[in-house]
Length: 371
Figure: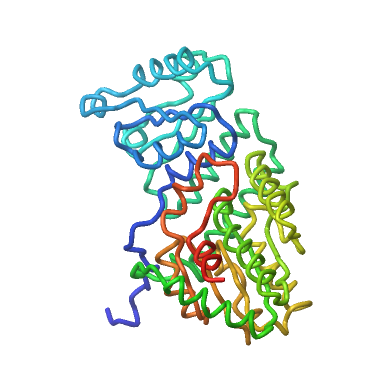
């Protein structure tokens, strides 16, 4: 068989990728589920479980061990579910599978029927072997609908956004190559200095928030600092385009948008254009591009925070682009797309869990300190 006769294999991502189990846990959090039970070994998803407990959801585990992999963990799951009810008196519970429980074929529903918790239980049969982490969120949404806590229309809207997000990452983000070396990006003080120079020259700019869920609590500070800098320097105020629709998404997501919008208003700044909700960043980037093409194509610079690669590069032609991300593996793709300055907000995720306000960003504080 010659080279031309071989069937081309799909690109395999060999760098660590987010887990479908973790995506399921975060989706339960967004659904305001009170307790999530990980049916698996105690160390599974340890870091994210601890972080999520900072954000108001209890995460416990059945703590399966080697004998449970042989004899089964049904009794363990029943006992843990009953204990969760006694300890926390939750109004809703999620059960999330792990590789261990799924491999041995644990039956979540049978355990729920035996435990009889008396509250809705979201049964998420998932493991880490899914190619895309977004599948964990989709399975959770479908399970939430089956449990009667999410309507079918919202499930379909969420699924559409998640599939778009997966395609976006494969096309222009951290999954666009088999391996992308992580990078901290450009030095923030150099980028801030250049932005200040452009403002002092009276150049016109546009400020874009295209953020995902709670990460917007820090990314919004980057854009707020841009507005503050322009006002302090007497420069043209960049219009702010943001995916901060307060009427779209799960209750927790809408709350984030309201809090950030109010923070801008309290500082004397407006959100000039709304592009969608904080769970709609794959589509919101396209909406931002349409607004730029129609109204701001003559701008000299653009500042984009959150998921900058969601904004099509062709809409930014001729602009000096400042991008702020929290993904070290998105730096290289953004540079390849022509973004001049790419910065990484380090440790953004843990800093934006369990808060209800805008959180100081490194780039924002750097910019303020240099005025």
